[in-house]
Length: 95
Image (cartoon, rainbow, N blue to C red; front, side, top):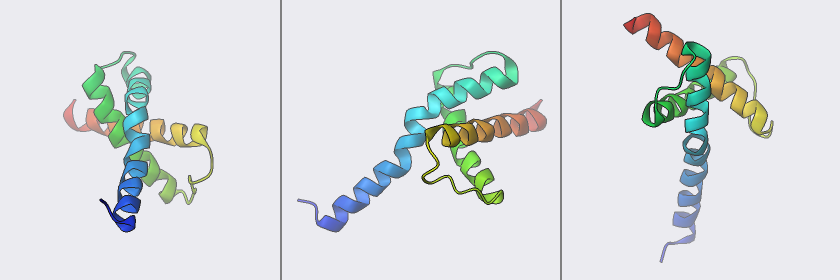
């Protein structure tokens, strides 16, 4: 049996990773459509979506915008913004 602290840690880890993983495919797909007009496949969309989610959170911190409690639409917009930024940087470096 897990202790109470162990259960809280597992819940925290699940909360921390649930949003990027569950929405990563959609975020990556939207960002790829914005940048190139087409999706890049499930795996690439997931990677772009997850990395973009964290990049969007970082961008919101740079702008002093607290995303906690702002709603799913605001979070989604910042995640897509982060994913588009990641794809833009990727294209500048490798294209």
